[in-house]
Image (spheres, rainbow, N blue to C red):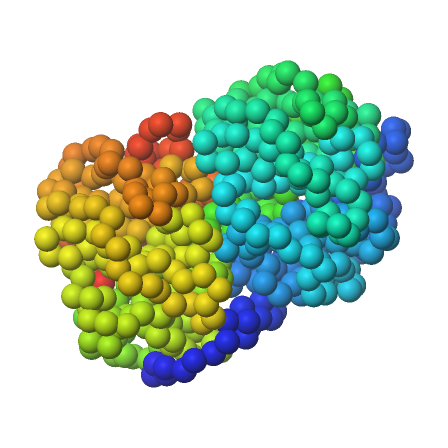
Amino acid sequence: MLHALHRRRTRRLAACTALAFGLGLLSVVPASSTAVAASTTAGAKPRFDRDGDGTSDRVYRSAATGELRISLSKTGTSAPFALSFPGMEILPADDLTGTSTPELLTLQADGSLVLRRGVSPTSVGSADWSGSGWQIYNKVLAPGDLTADGHQDLLARTPDGTLYLYAGKGTIDNGGPFKTRAKVGGGWQVYDQLVGTNDLDGDAIADMVARTPGGDLYFYQGTGSATAPFKARVLIGGGWYTYNQIIGADDLDGDGRADLLARSYSGAFYRYLSVGGGKFGAPTAFGGGGQTLSYYLGQGGVPAYGKHNLFTVNAAGTAFTHGALADGRLTAPRQYAGAGDFAYHWPTVNGYALDGVDRANLLTADNRGLMMWREEGGTPIGNQVGSGTAYQNYQFKVSPGDVNGDGEADFIGADHRGDLYLHPGLKSHSPAYLGPAVRIGSIGTSNMLIGAGDVTGDGRPDLVSRDGEVLYVHAGTGSATAPFAPRNYVGHGWYLYKYLASPGDMDGDGRADLVAVTPGGDVYRYSSSGLVDSYEFHSRVKIASGWKYDHVS
């Protein structure tokens, strides 16, 4: 049964990170530190050495459960990584406070950047520092020491492509661990992956690589200057579109130069060892299982916030969830709540997490308002997040994420006239709650509206609509008054489908994808192309058949 109960946001978040689920990914890390060759150059120190052996360790997140695990290089074993409020992304930025205690940064969905110190190799303590406003960036990365002063630095890119440097101070006193930001330059929106690599060429200065959606990979050599931190880019090569994530892995072979990992769309990892000068040796296999991961420490893509699943209800009113893997597939359906519980819980929508957790929220509307549901121990627990009859009366209801750029997840409803209304998430409100409706535009005669998440790859949530047989993308702008640009044409022929929905990112590249279901129950995936100023999807791929559901979202 469904139980309405008010719980503190912190308790729900802690419950989501306290799971213990082994992923069996020992093959993606070296067997032990003794297998690593002796260093030939000094190089830069590791950015995420949790066990003190001089080699960076790796953290990854399960796509199915959201649980974090860490692979330790000293022992070659993995364990749950105890980190409350892990947020959207973990940054491998060690030694920001000038102490010997391992540290890390977490980037939260509300725009908070939080510094925590390690308690043990597998656990992290409470926050030592936090800063707000980082939601203005679509990618934040920790490349290492760019300014040659011995302190870890950050880079941050806005959706319009402006890149900024936050030079580390080596202390959190007097305003936090970073100096005032300095503009690096514009035009960085042409890349869909920015990878902080640490030192690739053995000069003890951090470097970076960047990939275009077309697959060209470029090397940006660090200069050590805070005012001009990179030399002109050098093309490494093409064809890197075959990978959905490129990962800065630090030094994998002990030669003093940082190396890369790359994950294929099938989930296989490949190792690229640096030979200096922005060049790499031939790729070698480095384990598998990556299709089960929604996040890997040091990955270059824009964080894939979103739902990570689809929600379906059959004719008997029994609900199911279908998790999104990173290889374009969905997991087997898992029953949600009791048999028949959703026979009368209409209207229902599966949306982006209103409470800031990187998992889906189920939303139900009635004459009292809007309820948000999250499973705890297999039981759905509900909180009211909006009041009034408007939620029940909307023809379409979506929760695509933070559409107005203030760091809080929002709700959008469209009435039967096609008028579009925004219910903004209220700042600093726990549990999450939505504000009154503000009209933000119209979708006209559209007969479908999907809160897809970030289709375009710029870090902003987008909408997808169908008008007759034509599909459109409404790109997010981040504006509070006009959060979506005029609709952009995708293509004709979409009348073939009974349902269109999005679980967020299905193929591991960080961009939201679409699922289309025919009246006969065939299920297709449309992966977002991510091409700049393009609103295209790749050709459809059949991923399932036999779906007989009365609701898909």
